[in-house]
Image (tube, rainbow, N blue to C red; front, side, top):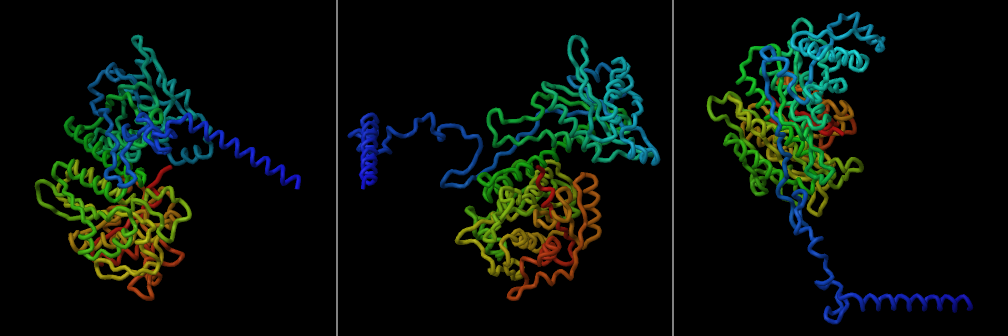
Length: 590
């Protein structure tokens, strides 16, 4: 009884204190004055205009509460210029006239026995570099400083034995101004006068871009390349592509001090080349082509990096329209809406798209050269899932990375941007993306649904997280039947099984056409984008059988990358060259 009375006294005291506090607040706040009708939501209690985001410039374009985002910002192009000059006709003083001077060096040629010895004894002393040509003249003008730089960093630099490696920067005072020099590794000296590999040039160009960024306040950079790197259009194009690509920095979603601009002070870069017969006009054209390819790469990265509150089917369609607008008339854009898709019977694609906030946008860009005969007609298709929750078979891991499920679409639209700038002759190209999201809603597809693709084939949905192949099915039929493409290449982040097989650096290639496989292999070697041809085991078609439909969208627990490729073959003519590239691994680089 005593405890009960004490508790009642405490409770009464709390009520009196609370009542007093509320009274004080009411008497001191205009929101509780009689004129405000005691409303805490009166105009006098609203945030001041200084806190009103509607009156401030937002850092990037996104949705509002009631409306989806309609456009995606693009990363601006680098402004630094790149040019190529004849080193043999240039004085050493001209080469030195830059804030940063980069001297490319090859490691000396070694026979097989020496290479084996080096593998066993990495601590072995490195022979000093013997500079030749213009590099020797520069070293002599600097009093042997380049030789000393190589010797002091011998164990780490190893005479440039690894392409893209570099020494620390050496500062030299010239005319009262500090100039910076570094040695750039170009890998082993090519044997038997073999041409330099594209991948070597790209690694070197990437290192140059990094050096221009790391060395602050570099406005000008001169690069001296040895005789083995001839001033051919292909070599210069490779350097240009990699240099501009590595100046990319996605700052669209950063503010203030978080913004990182690559080589912000850089104005001009010159390549001093000691050999080659290409004209200055040809070299300038190659640099332009390289920059155009880099622009396509930049857009590809922008699309993959964009979060879903920015990138949806509508804003991706807007991106496609802008590509066409900027192509100078070489590319036209067609967007099929839900009605257009329904008229074509695209039930597989629309089945996935039904769960999305935004309506489906079937993107079709057509490139045609302005003049000359068209010798081939190709289709390039990319998987365009702007976000993949897995649907009702919801993902249990990696959900935060599923914005990259549009990686195939990103590659296709990036290629379209580059092609629109480059305008190659003799080819008609069709770039196709069936854009949507794989979401959960009352309208979304569920396991056990049966969908009908535009070629009439029925598909039992055993797993809603095997949705990409459903959207691709109708895209393939469109390229094959409606457009009549003579060959088709499709890129998609299709399966985790491919990542398990090939890791994160190599994409899988599935095709029955040996000529197409060889072409893709050759391109892979030139660009350095690694690929590997995978088997199309026809006996695995048994795993795709359905008890109630023509086919199911999921195979067994094993060989998932193969059964996904086999599924896609149901939507392309058997005799038509067709390749499926699973880029689930390489699409994302941490």
